[in-house]
Length: 456
Image (cartoon, rainbow, N blue to C red; front, side, top):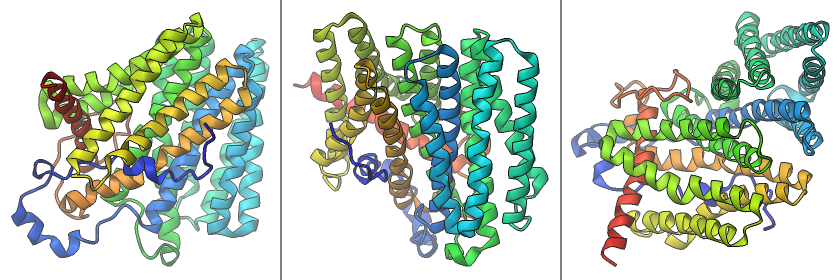
C-alpha cells in the first residue's frame, strides 16, 4: 500500500470519536450552567498545536534513539536506517524552532541537537568493547550537550524555561536513554522495557514544559491560548498512548521474527500498555467492562499481530491470511460500532477504512522488514508513528465537545485517578477519566458485537 505523507491523518483520528450517548455526558443542569464557557473549550488551539508538535518530535527522538542503539549493538541489518531516521528526526525539529525563534535560532538548535546524536554511536561502541574510558567520554559529551541546550533554551525563552530546570529534565532524559540501553546490553530485558516506558512518558513532560515556556514568553503569537489547559492535557495524553502502541507493536513484531532474546519482554511491555487502558476503563465501567475491553483489544488485534510474526517465521501462508482477516474483522467491527453509536455522524465505512489504515501501517512496517526492505520499513514506521498524532486532536476534540464542562479550566476535577503505569503522574484526573471513556467505548464495542453475533 502506498501511504500518504500527510501525517495529520484526519481520517484515522476521526474514526476514534466517542459515542454521543447520555451515559458519557454530565447532567443537563450543569451543562446549562456552564454553557457559555463550555462552548469555547477545544483541543485545537495554537498553543495546544505547538505542544502536540513537540510531543511528536521529542517522543519520537527518544524512541528512535533507543531503537538505534539497540540495533547498532546487535548489528541489525536495519541499524543504519534507524541511525538515519534519528538524524532526520532532529532535522525535522528545525522548522518548528524556526517558526518561533527564527532561522538563526533554529540553526543554533539544530547544531546542538544533531551533533549530540553521534554520542549514542560512541556509547554503543564503548559498551560493546567494555571500554570504560570510552563510556566515560561519551557521558562527558552528553553532559556538554545538556549544558549547551539548557543554555540555549534559557536564553531563547528569556528565562521562562530557566537553565537549571532545563538541565534537570535534559539530564534525566539522557539518563533514561542510557539506562534503557545499559539494561538491554546486560540482558535485563524486562527492566529495559520498563525504563523505556518511563523515559518515553517523560518526554511528554518535557514538551509540556517547553511549550508552556514558549507560549508564556510570546502569548500573542499563540492567540493568548495556553499549552497546559485540561483540553491540551487530554490531547497530549491521547497522543502518548496512541503513539506508544505503534512503537511497541513495531519493536515486538520485529523482535519476534528475529527470535530475539527480548521478544518476551517486548510482549510484556505491550501487555503493560494494554493494562493502562484497562485500569482506566475499570474506574468507570467496573471489572466486567475492563475484562471485556481486554478481550476485544487483544483477540483480533494484539494476538493477530503475534500470529503475523509466527506466520512469517514459519512461512505459513494460511496463518498469515487468517491473521490478516482477524485484523480486518477488528477494523470492520470497531468501525461498525462507531458508525452505529454515533448514528452515522461518523459513517461506518469511513470509520472502518480509518481504523484499517492504522493496521495497514503496522503490517506494512513489519512485512517490509521481513522482506528485507529495511529502509522502507524504517520510513513506514515513522509515518505510522506520526499517523497516530491525529488521534489526540480529533478524539480529544470529540470528547471535550461531548462533555465540555469536564475540561473547563478552573472547575473541580470529577474523575478518579487510576495511576496508569505508563503515563506521567502529572496527568489530570479529567484527562484520565477521558481515557477511561475511550476504553469504555472499546469495551462497549466488544459487548455490542458479542451480543450481535449471539443473536445472528
